Each structure stands twice: as C-alpha cells, then as structure tokens.
Length: 258
Image (cartoon, rainbow, N blue to C red; front, side):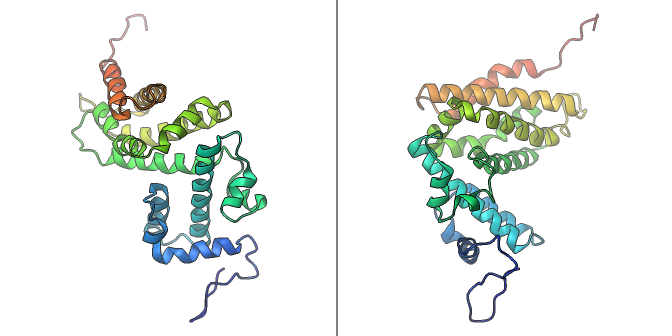
C-alpha cells in the first residue's frame, strides 16, 4: 500500500513493485481533479467521479484506472496523428513516460485501448436510458439515451477521424463487434424492464432485438457521417436511421403456421 507521513510526498511501498513513479505522480493529482481534467475529457471525469462515488475502491485501483485513462488518451492522439497500424505500443508508452512492459500492465494490446471507453460508454448509455420518463415509448427512450454520446462525438473534431479508423481498419473489426455486445447487454438490461404500449414489460428477447436495431441504426448513421465527411450532423443521420426503423418496432402479426 502507499504510505504518506505528514509533510512528505507520496512514496512507493517496497511491496508495491507494480506501481512506478509515474503512477504515484498521477495519484497525487487526484487532489486537484479539475486541473487534471482541464481538457474536459469525459472519460477522465468519469473515472474520477466513479472513484469518488465508490469509496470502497482502494487507492491502487483508482490509480490504475487513472493511468489507463492517461494511456488511452495518448494512444488515441497517436492513432489520429499516425494511423492505427503505424502506431506502436512503444510509442504509446513513451508518450506517457512508461515502458512497453508497463503498458501491458494496463492493456493487453493496442486494440484493447478502446475497451475502457466502450465499457464506460455502455454504462453511461444504460444510465441515460434508466433516467428517461417511464411513460416514454421504449423506442423513443432508446433514441434519447444516445443523445449525450452523439453530441459528444459531434463536438470533438477528432471523433470523425477515430470513427473512420474504427470502421475502416480490419484489425479493429473484432473490437467493433465487442463494443456492440457490451452496449447491447448494458442497454437491454434496462430496456427489458420498461413497459410496452400494452402495459407489459418488454422482456429480454424484445429488448435485445430493439437495442440491436438501434445499434444498426447508429452504425448506418456513422458510416454515412464518415462517407460524407461530416456534411450532415451525426444526430440528424441517426434520427433518419431510427425513424426508418420505427415502423418495424410495433407488434408483429403472428403467422398462423408459426
């Protein structure tokens, strides 16, 4: 564990070999989270907020989350500047003052860098859906749960480049599918408890089907957004996709032979 005597700076306990000087330096910055998150990076704020809301999480785990965020930010910056394939793990590690070996304490690969953002975004989407008024139709509530994500992507110029990279890089296709699975499960867990127009809970099968359709709509919107090079706002494209699917979300007539 980390120890600190009055009037001294943080020091590394001899038993904590996995924590290096960079890690400790970032831990000390938790006392001034606003300064550390001055770039208004949502993932950074989410990690810090999560640490404050969960007092049972130890210092070491909070430190680990913060270093992961720092590495992810450095990686995305390099991906945008150089491209995914051209960026090496050594470059990502060096950008944060770490070694390749230290990088692998936090991520198994370059592709894994996206994992932290996907998991956190899935939680945020689920929380947004849960906060929607109970009387809203499930499809409308599902669309509105993506508002913050869509607005955040639209507000950051580099998001278009990152989205293009994810869609067009074969090495990231599995990562993209993994994102879908994470978001599908997180949203379906909440959506299945909402009431349909007949007053009944949707249930798991219907919830998974609706979320899958919404994610397909998001994919089509992002694909067009990238192809048009941001000619139309992502939110407008997503609305077009969701509105096209909406008529299909009502009750289906049961075939007599089924």
